[in-house]
Length: 292
Image (cartoon, rainbow, N blue to C red; front, side, top):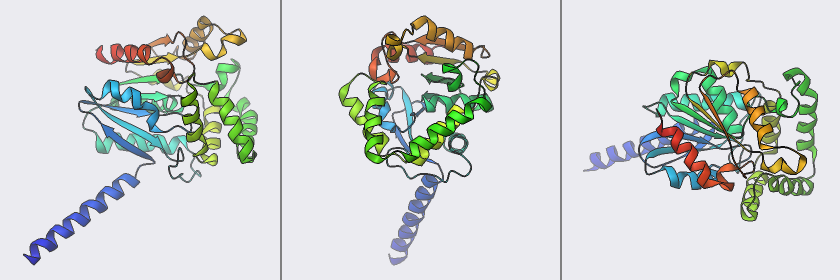
């Protein structure tokens, strides 16, 4: 009897140790919900995986959803940034797919998460089934300046990185409230997203922003050989003379190297499309995912 209890204790200890080491081997937290074919949902800059809660409700009856919260965002422990942020996260997602999944997943990425999805698919399309990009460009700097290059974007990226790191906490908090109000409509969600941002590592935000501004994937995405859906937004810029057609053209230019891409622009959503126009969002992704 004593031997049996001892054996059970050892097995329990080993299983707990394995679970801890397995989880800590990835630079993100993972929440798994639902049953079916796998989907990995990647949030954007300084966002929690909870940004996908409504999306999860729409998908979990038919899909196994793996919802990530990336290192350094919303109370998650930051990673060492010596090797950069995006490359480490990307390698972690690749490792997760290889070690934890038995089927090719669909990736759904918002903003920074969409950029990671593009980069992963560019590197190895065979490991993925499809990708859905939610309001993210292959080269964000070129969205504002068509003549931008990685090199020419470095000075501004350095300036923004320095500003994020050096701004006083109270000022940064006010800036985040103003910024979030340009990205979504609902006042309660603005508060939630602002809290996530303020709970995030400022060093991580600054480094991630720098890398996004100075990394151009426009040529690399020509390597993507799986179906791609891009959902863009324009509504936040309508008061500045920006039209839906202008944004459509901008996306088409940046994704022209991808033969299997479909681009749709949300009618009235701001940057957080899945929050501002959930019904339109669910309809578009379900049609895309169900179409072979």
